Image (cartoon, rainbow, N blue to C red; front, top):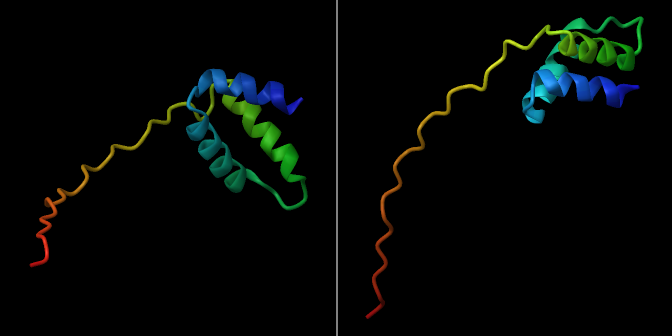
Length: 76
């Protein structure tokens, strides 16, 4: 069942958002038009559970730009 595949893949990549991103990218690259997308997704989750595609890391976050303080003056 796919839920078991997702659970076992989640043990390799615990961040669920990163897991879904990796799975989407891999399915897009590996999908062949003559097969069902579900089968490709199942294969990707099996590969992730077996240790493929797990050398992924979150990208470095860029520092946010400095926001100047807002000066509010009362109307005369």
